[in-house]
Length: 229
Image 1: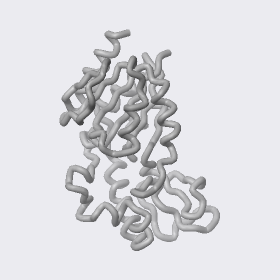
Image 2: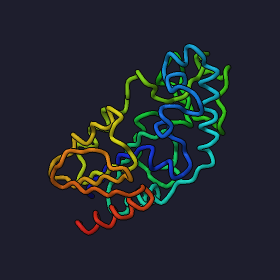
Image 3: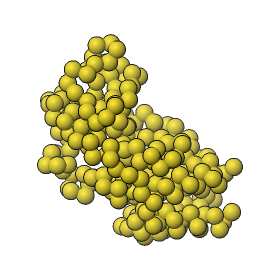
Image 4: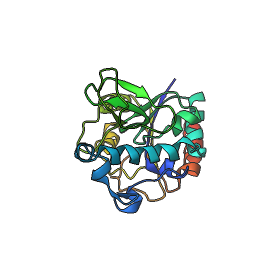
């Protein structure tokens, strides 16, 4: 079975009501992004950071996958699908995708502040001060913050190199290192980019640009991909 690798970004989740900070000039609910998404922000005001992600989690808890997520999941009938997502929500999981790499962490997980290998599921939406790991240290959101390494990047690169079809949906291709994955796709591989505001990409063979929102653009891409088979 051929491998279809999908790189998804904030645009696909925005249609399900998940806020994106880039749409508001780098502010999330009035906070400078470095206050709530950096190691320094956590060090300066952990209560603020915990509350910020609690609100994100509360919002995401009731969000439903849209047609874009569902269509990507349906493609598992035809391909080995690997979803590499920059999103921290669980909408791809809710839609039924079974092989997902979360580059920037997972909103519904917490991890130890002394041992990054200790990761826990969060029941509901609240992570509080005093919630400790088994080693007695405070738990923090399992999110890759600005200035931190992206531990799943190596795995994402390996999957991308093996892709027979590559799809980009809902991302501006401006956030690195994720945006650099496109460079690892073979020239022979069909590449589909879906976004209502088409990112700048260098002209290349086998590149198909679909200037549309995720929920309808993925359906168009699915038809085109299946016609190639």
